[in-house]
Length: 253
Ligand SMILES: [Zn+2]
Image (cartoon, rainbow, N blue to C red; front, side, top):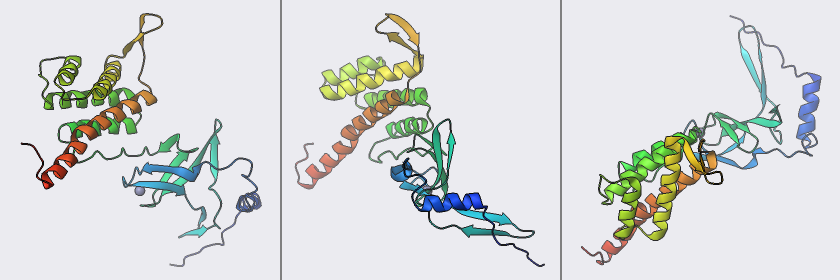
């Protein structure tokens, strides 16, 4: 079979645009936004920087496809929609493509959540991982509900009676010096946001009425951070301290 290919033809207008971009003139008044996007890759899960995908053109001949790389550009071509600039990036680890809006306000496919420390015991670890997975797909209400669940599981694991409500369990832990005063504040804050996500209502403090609202991104991220920080101090730091004390024969039975 004879394979027929034709030389790659780049329209004059595209060629001018490419050359102009290569000369840093085209975007000089509007810097490209992609320079510092770091994520947990949606494909391979590693935490890597996203770099601009190299531009190439291809043409279909009768039996073959010819791919021709173009000279390196200072930035990739962009698509602008409603004033938001989208660009094609690639994971520096696995080289697979990722679509990014501006400096990462949206990323497609959505990045994977970061890992949860293996020193956090089950079932708290799984609950926190699920909360972070919800966060990664913008499910803000679901993420804080899972964070609240992780919190309650931890409270029981720390010795709070099962039959109590969560606010009572947190108070029990604080009263018995099983958590510190700052940790009690983290727990209470996470509990309130978790309640908001679960019951889709919150008191309108100014108006004194109950308003139906959703948890927003910032609230969800803050809540996950609080619970993760709590677990880090309770379990990860606790284990490290025990290891070091044990090594030196200073661990009290
Ligand atoms: Zn990757």
